[in-house]
Image (cartoon, rainbow over all chains, first blue to last red):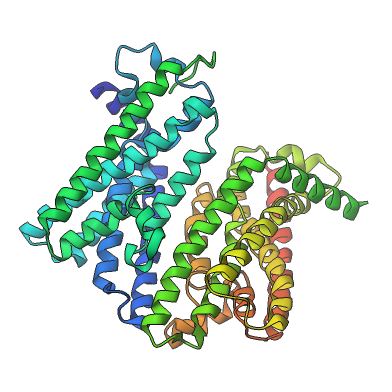
Length: 252
Length: 259
């Protein structure tokens, strides 16, 4: 496991110029989002209890969590295509657990940029006292498990369907919806964001905890993280039993 | 001969898009998600702001976002990177041997591939807007918005080819797609109407080509009857097409002149 992770790190670090270019590109991307929220709240003031500072914390949480999931366990977004293209064959022959190997095998520098940016944004705009740092870390950890588990579960659908479109759409859905405050939605849509597409737990719930820590919401966040991760792992493991070789000898 | 070849390239690309319904579903699904999220945000903002922001009501903002998102989401988001990679890797070289200009075929192919996705997104978006907000405010401006949306797409594709052509000279130019899209997002008015920007920023944004790629059709779709926007778009589209052709011609000369 450690060797796999080390190999993934060395691979992403091999072209250092490209590594830094990608990191910088993601920084520019995230700064544009900061500009959007600043301009938006400059004009609007406050929307359904959300102000500029909350929106910036939302951005800090989602970039840190998504940056970790997509950057450090980069293959989690590719699970469906790895399965559909028969690329799991190489991983099955290894003495390490297939899922662990798959997740540790790829590091995406562009998303590492997100991870670094999210932490920096919190440090600069999040009023980082020791208590707030702890709540931020807790929120990010729960968001990582919710987000990662959801992507893994959707990607594992490819074991049954042989196609990756649902996984791709699910990725866009949870990422896009988590980029906005959950309170701008109402009625059944809001319910969906706490259940079927759990984007509220990826960003809005951690921000609510940062705003005023509530043990009930914290427990709900932790429960969602546990449930999502469990569903992701179980979906992958049960799907793996159905997997038939793609007869392709590649690196997973 | 050349025009018929380009038309055939566009038609073939359109057919290829239509033959991949799975990708179209993802594309339209993603478009609806973005549109739902951004319109919800703006409608909530209008509601909190006395029903109107910078002259846009909740209904107008909904149709604004439906149009602005369709012009951008229907396209391949990493077009600059993909074209840049093909130039940088030399994969483009066989295209230079053909009797038709490589950039012409690429532009025609890309436009042909985008149009079916654009139509699907617009149909879905119009249905969504009518359902959650109501019918468009003015049918006259919607009539102008349709050609404006097509011009926006052509202008954007041409501009992306002009930027990607930098890969003939610079190795890492393909990463420019991130920066390019952020300009379209903010200075182009895709996420935020230009009237909402601070005055100085708004003045600069209106002078840039990015406003022809999202703001112009969105402004028309939101109910403002401003035919001048179409003229501005036509000019920027011509400039971007000439820029793309010129950049590729210079790049190809550099490639063939190299020892």
